[in-house]
Length: 453
Image (cartoon, rainbow, N blue to C red; front, side, top):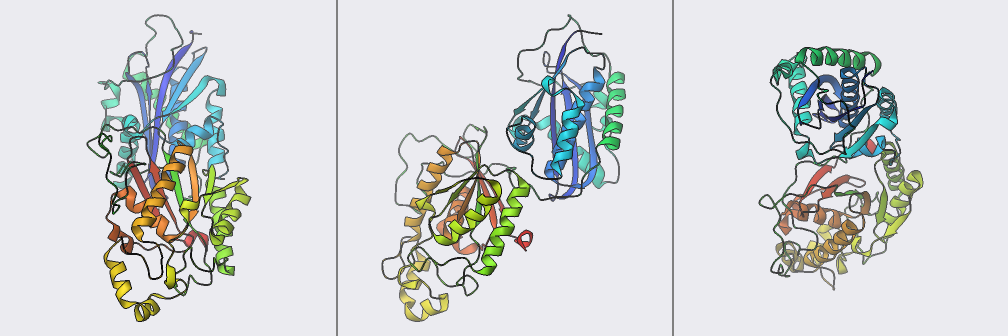
């Protein structure tokens, strides 16, 4: 039996539709040279992102084990850009989704848990596995299975890679894997084992925590678009021209409160009105939102607007997740002044000139001392900054209103104030914004509320 050996496994999975056509990719790397020792990838049919990511992890661990069956003390350092998989397999997050539990158990059974460590890496550092996963999905689209020769000629001419790992476990000098034939045999065995032992579960709840490609956005602490504040001199540049910092983001999951009696009538309902409670429909939406987030298993904190309809929605989710709710005043809805409780048509009849001015400028407030959209943007951006600073690297559910959610999305996209009038948010709808340390943000929208019916 040979002495101890350490390798790195980089794995990824993807779904074009979530759930949709899915595939995974994994590569086993020599940490001393950065050389890939083995690759594996497969199209797995219709599945979610998370299922595909777990399948990639399982295949990567299985391939590492197959490459070194006689290693007395094989140590594997796993690097993935899936925060969910890394945190769950590290034991820091609970595994609540029924589709994930059997996959996590299979991954944990491939090698002794004490011999595997996990590290989250930005997507940009996981390009090899991501490429393999996309090749597998492309192959599935074309009605074929992925073959190693499609990308690396079965490792006969492997590409070099730079890998950051913990200190290596020492083995005898020159203990290297020789030749592509051994790698091909090991990977064939690994794929066969995965097919037999790890069937794909039925598609479950789509993952809403994986960020899309970063979009240029105002950095937390910088003035909101449409604001009269000037950017301080010397403020670090953000956007595509700045140096990226893609460490673990603060991920804000934006949940609009459930319906009130005013919602289906499309009446102005802000922070200056009657503070209505949830209707029976709204309470049902809140309960189904709680079920959704309980199944998802990714929310770590809950922050709510102080208004009643949000506190009631947040309480329903918090009760299911066993979390406390923190109140953030900056997340309250716009004060619509004299327009509170009126429909748009009624406001047009009574305050036509004021309404026209309000629609034309973000600096104009509703009749009777309400808030302008510029003022709302200022306080929402300040609340965002506080939340991002407090919960860096965590996933936070923000239960709030139409204007704050639209404002957060608008600011993340760098869109002008008039974009507020081009968005629609249903009651209990979900959007997600991930904020990175370099000030960039990524936005994901899920305005379809069919999952809450």
